[in-house]
Image 1 (cartoon, rainbow, N blue to C red):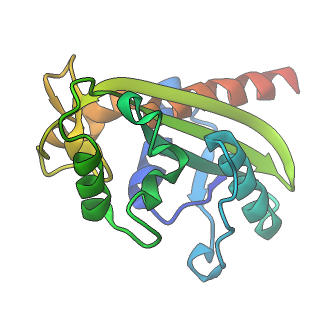
Image 2: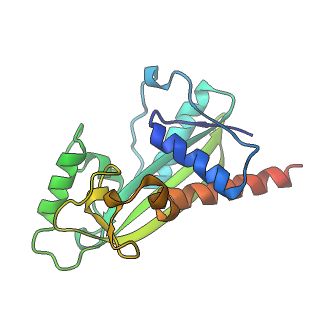
Length: 201
């Protein structure tokens, strides 16, 4: 099965390939969408991760006959009522970078004792406008009072994962993928696609 990832992020593509390898889906041909950098991206108007993932996958499916995978993810902080949520990448405003988003989160969390949080990821596969499958992954942790670590991206330096005893930015990508929200979602998705392929034979 050919699966086209609607991403220009080599890290996300590597994670998809890793998920296929872990699940034993050697028959999957995984590539990034050709010419994606030249395609005007869709506006992410969904109220949920799943809506945005489906929206993006459906949009990019018009540029290829293969099945397209797209993902939406975010950080949900209990004390902030689930914020930043679907606006995680834009928490400090449109065009904000990781540093600005992290700074806003730390400011919002000043003086708060409840620092529970979770990362959520939803992936969707669409072929020529029709949804083939979706999958969701989560991982729970807490928000640190200051960034720790130089690996990862996004809110990883502030996300403390108790079983590891450190932040997501203090571990290698391979170890993070074993437990991360995106890793869990991608593994679940690959299992679903394998089952669908087996059922269609």
